[in-house]
Image (cartoon, rainbow, N blue to C red; front, side, top):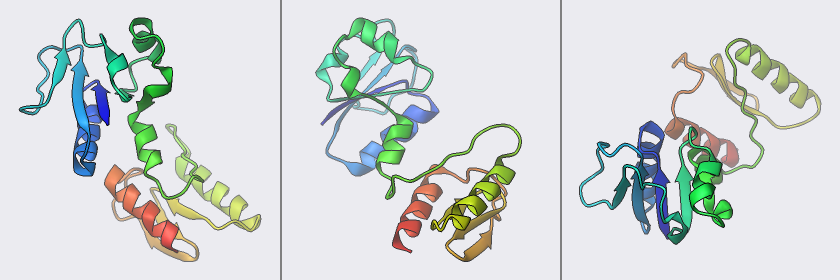
Length: 164
């Protein structure tokens, strides 16, 4: 599959590493910064024309800061091929029932309240939050003390949840 990663900063690099591990893809890096460092031997489109010709790719993974409209303005007809790094993450998730809670204040409280509501409704729940990790009736404290301990940890956590 031919994949264009549009935007090669933190998200783009993480996506490249993820796709490289999967293997079997032709990856091209596209970035407006002509000075961006691209791994040796990897095809790239850098600078002003970085959005040209994206219609030749099967999948276009855009950075969150790039509006799809900007891609579509130069590449009409590719809307169905455009995705994001987050969509790739959730596409590899073992469950479709994920609730993400974001914001500046109150995330932990919201997580615990929502968990209690869902459990009271008879739903099986799992929690990955600043306070704890919970699967069913098993609870362990979050010793990382971070809301998001990292994408690879979260992927493993979701796979663990699926097996329970």
